Image (tube, rainbow, N blue to C red; front, side):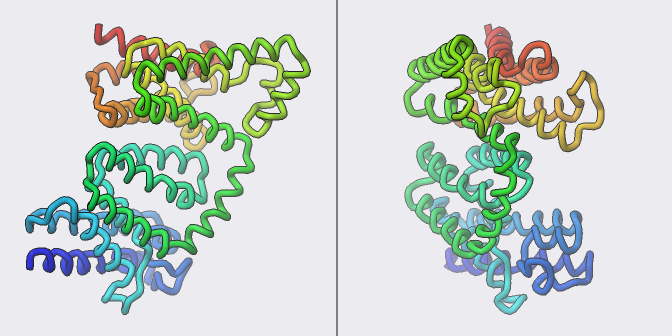
Length: 387
């Protein structure tokens, strides 16, 4: 009986059409007949403005949370929480108040994942924010491929048992099926930013996250250190070969043209500096080496992306206060989430010092080459504070 009550309550909570309500309040329009005709946050934003969009997202994202909370209060085990979230999403998609009409339920799923996979969702949120800043459009297509990793990492870490994981996979499958047309449209949108060399370079740079996110969890600190140092030595060797061999330099230019800068044709590339800096940082103890590489990959990008979009207050040549604040914030946040994910906590004071030193180095990047120095200096100061 308690389980049945939980399911019915989850559906009723999910069926509340917040996007329809707030769109009606702020614009007087019927969301089912305007824009994409989807009863969701994005369409509400487009039709009725940002306030309606934010309120719609807030209401929709709490649907899964409230459904799970009701289940928890009624004593329903955690393994069944994804099912309650799914029923709330189904209620959103087939609302009794809108005669079976509704949206996909992405916002409700986001709220559900925050409860089901807290740390994993925090990492997902950081990546989502990074990709949103990078692409600017078509982001739903890109983000759709991150969901499986959240579930996989959550299962491997023991956040969710096998039954809960299976039910979560079904939940995500429902989102793919229900939102397939939206995904196809998002795919068309995402192809435009990928034509931009700047966007391609950023995506290439994010691959550096594979060192701390994949190499270390799979093979441990010793193999991680070997991999990162060898990668740095290979980068150094290729740069030396490029310098003395014109033919090889031309060959490498063609290979890396999609992600290279024209001014790097006859000087050390940013990617090589990144790998060499990461290799130096890799010589410091874990987790300082790992966290510093995360700070380099994300902090440097956020400084540039936020600075380009919203930077208005310049504090150094080419460096905005907004960009530097973004660099510090994401360096600290990503370091905090990562250290908890890998189970190797350090003091938050060390994280603050590391994020601050990374931000300062990024600010003076025109003189220090932040790709080379950002990770080693951040690793050094985090290590030094803990001596």
